[in-house]
Image 1 (cartoon, rainbow, N blue to C red):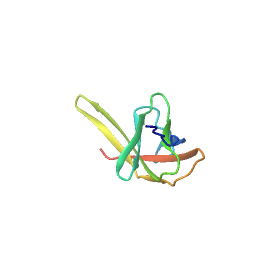
Image 2 (cartoon, helix red, strand yellow):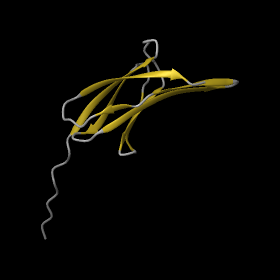
Image 3 (cartoon, rainbow, N blue to C red):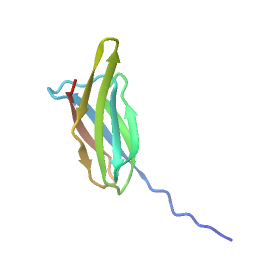
Image 4 (cartoon, rainbow, N blue to C red):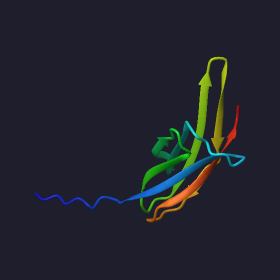
Length: 103
């Protein structure tokens, strides 16, 4: 019995830069994830940077979303971004998310 597996699907790097609505970079705790058909495929959280790189599969359409939450005694804050579509491709891509404060 000989079983041949197909070649693995190649990765595509998608760099996500996260900003506040006024254009100021979000420096910490921004969380970004990619959805493929409604299922989360990849996620990362930024530390000391507003740039996150997601490793996605080539040839797939994705929807990238992001948020930031900071909880502390007596309150906190939460911000989220509108989703950005990333069409199928093979080349690296760069997108921007703009977080707006919700509370």
